Length: 123
Image (tube, rainbow, N blue to C red; front, side):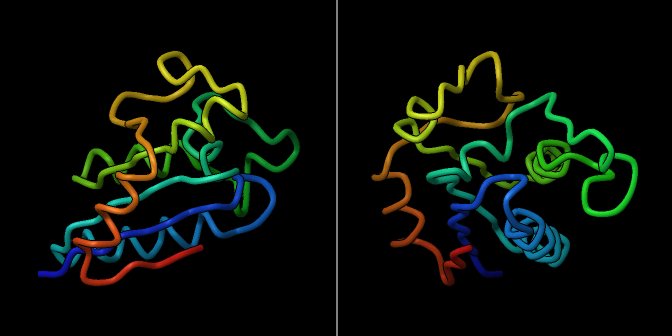
């Protein structure tokens, strides 16, 4: 099986990159591949818990919030790391704002993913 790394730089409500990253990772996990995510820049906002998008949360792209989707991936074995500098710059309180299983790391963690993964997808 392959090891697939994802670099996610887009925020949860500025594009559909998070959803593409989720769907690709979901498919990879379902086929037995190892999956890691590194959330960088505004991507650090994607796994923040208790987010809502009023008026859009009940259907379509946001019927489930991004954090809920990434919690599913973590439960199924994916590694989710958020850049600590990006977390700090965005005022995220990691212990309070991230659900269990979301790790805070630094760029050497991204370097490890890039060096060890069979493929890296940047979104």
